[in-house]
Structures are given as structure tokens and as C-alpha cells.
Amino acid sequence: MQHFDLIIVGGGLAGASLAVALRDSRLRIALVEARPPQRADGWDARIYAVSPANVAYLESIGVWKHLDGTRVAPIRAMRVFGDAGGQLEFSAFQTGVPDLGCILESSLMACELWENLKRQANLQLFVPQQPAGLEFRNEVAVLRLADGQVLSAPLLVGADGRDSWVRESAGLSAVNRHYREKGVVANFAVEKPHQNVAWQWFRDDGVLAWLPLPGNRISIVWSTPDEAADALCAMSPEALAETVAQAGGGVLGKLSLITPPLAFPLRLMRVPEIVAPRLALVGDAGHGIHPLSGHGINLGFQDAQELAGRLLAAKPWEDIGQLRFLQSYQRARREEIHLLQTTTDTLRRLFADRSPLLRPLRNAGLDLTNRLPVAKSFLVRYALGAI
Figure 1 (cartoon, rainbow, N blue to C red):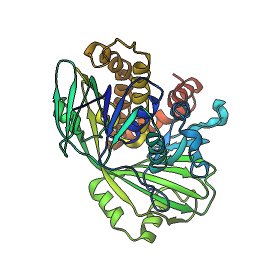
Figure 2 (cartoon, helix red, strand yellow):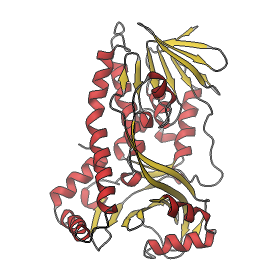
Figure 3 (tube, one colour):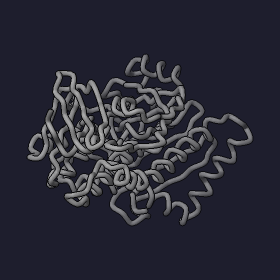
Figure 4 (cartoon, rainbow, N blue to C red):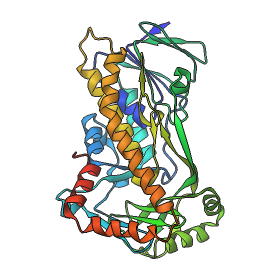
């Protein structure tokens, strides 16, 4: 049996960033991952909007400065449109900040995090590996790998995604609400400069977001019912580009497909307890939200930052796997996770309701918020991570 101070199962963005954040700690860390990330050919269809607070987090752990700046696009403004004329606009200039966030490829961040992991002296990588058995004893968590190796540590972190093997093996419940929708993602070249504006439309057929990429390119996320998503993915490149351009009102002119569309099922997932004795969950293993807010990876990074901060502050004699220690992490994360899950779910249901009485009310709400500087300031500051 190989003994460590911390075992992380899952080397995605949240799990890898947690390990990198602990690079200067006294902890001996094991990270178990089935397959390391690889850079996509051309542009990665899976992109993320990273909030300024999480840009600062990635800067603090030494990752951001090594990213290829030519693959990162700042968001200077965001324009949101309801389904009956309502509008809401946010501007970095009016808010007094350089940008509202940054758009970049998932694989760009993942590969840079892994370059750091490979050089990390207090880390041992178990890759490619699959977990096969998990047992919790009084003082350690014991993880058996598929090849027969056995690892133990006072604390095990599950960072292995929404269908978390760790969460299921530990018996932590997850409450899922399937939206019967898919998120369709793809990248396009655009005819007109996007001027680093992010666009979002609440439509009868779902929620469509256009996110700026470097150069005259955008990435889209179209959250739409399963049948409509399948139809989009079955279109020819030309038909899909024309459909997406029309759905956005032609604001950026003609579109040309860069990456084939991909679709992934959407669901709300609440995990009542993200800790247990010897166990903590981070990232998608501990929560799932609708992508209309763009906050999925930001929640994961904040999980990692919060847990890393508590582990770094722990005294040498503290038992970091004790439930009392871990509950402070859960309390610190519970409010933000619940707020974003509830807000995004409520917005999705509000705009999915086809009631003719509700349509003018929700659009009036967008217009009213747009005219209230205090409300807009609160929303922007929250998105920036300033509150």
C-alpha cells in the first residue's frame, strides 16, 4: 500500500487546479486520471467563460501567464435579449473594469495545468488509471486501482465529473433534474468584427449564446430541446451556419463553421452533502447547473481554491480528513452553489414557459433591470467575483 496525504481522483480542470494550488505545500499528493488532456486540432469546440476572480486564481497558481494569449478573448460587453423585446446590457467600460471575463478553450487550460503537474515535486501521477474500489477506515481512505495498486490517504477528493464514481462509491446522493435539452457547441468564423461582445438570446427554442474568440471567430452554446439539438447536429455545415446566423439576427453577418457541432445532455444536479469523513467533492462531482449562466467551471475553480486554501492553512497536526474540518469547506461553498443553481434553473423555467401572460412580464423585467444602475452593478460585481 502506498500512503499519501491527499488523493485526488480526476484530473480535469477543477482537480488539476487543486493539485497545482498545493504545489508548495507539505502534502504528498496522488492524482488518479484515466487519460491526460490533449490539445484539439484547430480550435477546441469546448470553451469556457472564466470570470476575473478565477483568472486571478489561475494567476496565483502560476498557470495563467503561460497560456497562449493569442487563444484568449476578453469580454468587453454582454448583450442579453428576451423573447419579446426585453434587453439587458453589461459593459466593462461602464463598470470600470478591464473586462467582464475571458473566453478560452478547455484543452488550453487543461494542458497547461498538466504541464505544471508533470513538474510538481510533491505529486505522483497515476495515469492512465481507473479506480476500482474505495473503502473508508477510521484514519484513512483506501483506494484500489484497476491494476491492483492500493493507495491510502487521510483525505480523498472526488473531482471526477458529474457521473462521479467517487460520489457513487461513497454513497453520497445526487438529485438530478433532466431538462430534456442538450447544449450544442460549435465554433464559427464571422463576417463582421465581434468587438469582444458576448451575446445571449432567450428564444422559444431555448437559449443561444455567442461568445467571442480571438480574431473574427465566435463559439456558440445553444441549449435547446433534444430533438432540436439533434436536428442542428445533423445539418450540413452551410445549413447550420445559416441557421445560427439567422437565430442571432445576423448581427455578425455571414457565419462559416470551423468545428463540427457537439451536443451534451443538460441537467440540474444537486448534491446535498459534498463532504463526508475522509472525502470532499469539487467541481462537477459536487454540482451541476444549466450553462446559460456560464458559471460551471467558475464554480469548480472556486471549489478548488476554497479547499486548497483550507488545506494550506491547516496545522501539521490537524487531521484534514476529519468531518469537522471538511464541513467548513462545505459551508463556505454551499451558498454560492445553491444561489447559482437556483437562479439559472429559475431563469430557464421562466423563459421556457410559453404563457402569453408571462412573456411581457419577463421581458419587462429585463428592461427594468437594465434601467436600474444599482441592480446592474450588483449583477456585474457578482459575475466578476467581487462580492
